[in-house]
Image (tube, rainbow, N blue to C red):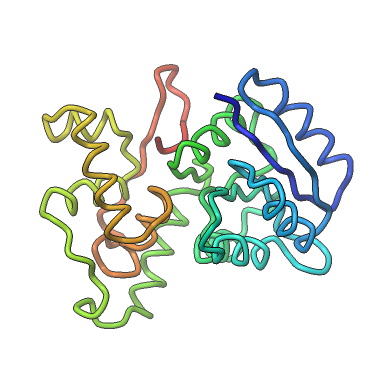
Length: 237
C-alpha cells in the first residue's frame, strides 16, 4: 500500500529535500507541498494524505495552529508529523496538545524519518528519541497541575486496557507489551483498538497524551526505551 504524504515548510529547498528523501522509499508518494499553515490546511482538505510533514515556524499561520485546525476537522484522517530544527520543549508541548501524531527533529536520518512517516500512517505515534523521555515527563508534570477532577474525565477502561495504556506510555512496542503481559500481539492490538475507541484518540501517541491529562499515566511510570533489532532507537509502533 502506498503512503501519501504532504509537506509543509516555508523553505523551498527544505520541501525539495524532503520530497527527494521520502520518494526514495518504494511505498511513499508525495502528493503536494505548502509554504505556510493556511496552504497546509487547504492541501490536507483537498488531497487527504495519510501524513503531512509539518514545519512549526511558518509565516501567516504557524505549524501548531495549522495542526490544530487539521485535527479539529471531524472528517480528517491525516496524521500530522511535526518536523522542526528546534528541540525546545514548548514547541513539542504545543504540537502534542494540538493533536500531532508525531514530532521529529529535522536532523533525523533518512531511515528514521521514513520509519516515522510509516508509523504515523499506520496509526501509531512517534517522538524523536533524543527528546522523548524529557518531554513526556515534563508533559505529565504540566498536565497534572492543570488537570480537572479525574472522575469528570476518565473514560471507563478495563484493567487490562489501563495496563496496556501505561506500557504505551513507557514507549513499549506491541511485541514488547505482549512479552511483558504473556499474551499474543493480536491481543494487545485488540485492546489498543478499545483504548482508542473509548478515549477518542486518533492514534497511540494521542492516547498517551489523553492518559497524561486524565491522570492514568504519571511521570514516574515513564521509561522510554524503544529499540529496534539493530539496537537503534525506533518510533513507538
